[in-house]
Length: 92
Image 1 (tube, rainbow, N blue to C red):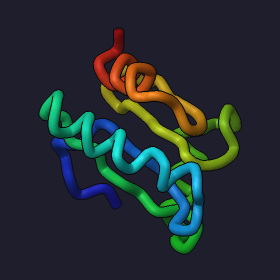
Image 2 (image 1 turned 45 degrees about the horizontal axis):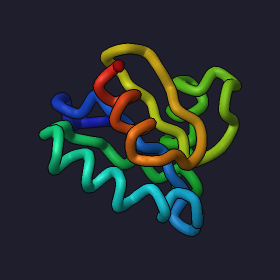
Image 3 (image 1 turned 90 degrees about the horizontal axis):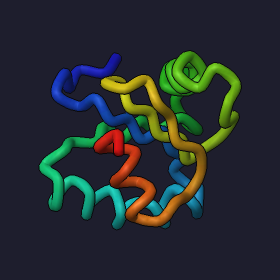
Image 4 (image 1 turned 30 degrees about the vertical axis):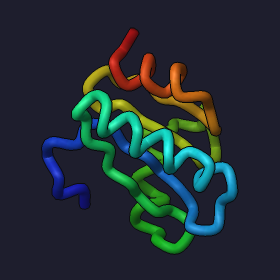
């Protein structure tokens, strides 16, 4: 399913989700400033990806945007500011 082994940060999103689109520039900034790679996973039009999100979500968030850090096992629900996103990504 997720072929990019380097990406341990997952961004589950919906194509038409306004809040997900608001996070896109912050995700891009995170990748540039930290060198981390974020794997974007569309869930509104892909049932396999939606199932994968539910496995990681375990009922905590229940929607998108949903971010999961495979390295730490921590998740982040909804849209956030850059500092919160960066702290989550770097486990700070």
